[in-house]
Image 1 (cartoon, rainbow, N blue to C red):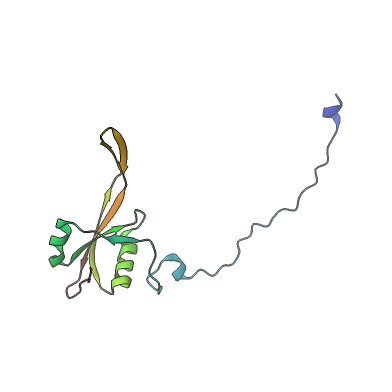
Image 2 (spheres, rainbow, N blue to C red):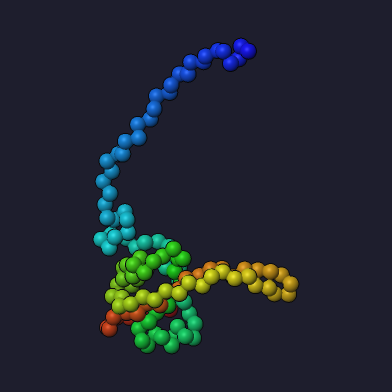
Length: 127
């Protein structure tokens, strides 16, 4: 057959160079403690409940935080936003769950809470 006997010449396209570009990476772009801005999206809001209100006299404050936030980022954000010193952080992750009410199925969303204990002499003013 003539189809297989023909040799086709392929024109090679110029290859793109995959060299690494020299990019100056500063600590500010990776969320280090040396930046001046408060990271957005870490703290969603302060959590209000009876247990959270009882813990206020122990300098423990409860916040709803982003599910991707870790303790280091939460600590940095609290210290920058409220100008306080954090002693300890405990996190609680609640999984999403299916609910049913009058035959209609729904879903409770996944949340993450951070219980922040402040050092002596510090407190957060909240509304």
